[in-house]
Image 1 (tube, rainbow over the protein chains, first blue to last red):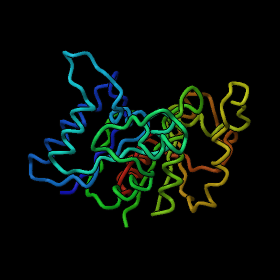
Image 2: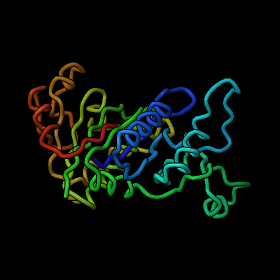
Image 3: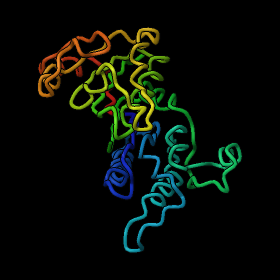
Length: 130
Length: 117
């Protein structure tokens, strides 16, 4: 079965980001496919490379980056949600004349159309948080 | 092509969940058959005469008047959520079909995907 995972919750204060990650790992472990992970609303916080959680806690940003790298699953963060919350890639940082980019490795910034496309292409869309 | 039901549950002010849900449904309408359901505090998004400008917010709910232009004609509202808040449909800015709990259940199962905001 083909899944899309939608992450809407902020990673630092809601458990939804790591729950979504564990779900995604389980989906692949069960032999299913993930079409895309889409980060929307406060969920784009999972793509913030500048967040520093305490050392004795799991770093959701790093964990997602690692998941994207090892699984090859596409991690897409909504551009409108990202801009509002200061998650920028090099292109956006330059466009808005901000001092630096802040998006974590393995994530790409794209439009909401990617969420709708994922809904239409997947058998199941599973939302976390929000 | 799959169909998508968007569910609005967020209050119109004090957060941008409603605005981000609206953005999603408008984007969805460009791709496929979409419907919109307001439930819980989400029904407050439909109230007429909102003036969030005094709080420094933009009145995104005005866009609901243009749903038909986006091809979104299936707009529903939870009757119980209205009643719980002492509201009636005459106070809403657009025509919506009022649904009971059972009808909402049937609505959700009739769409391929559901996105809740």
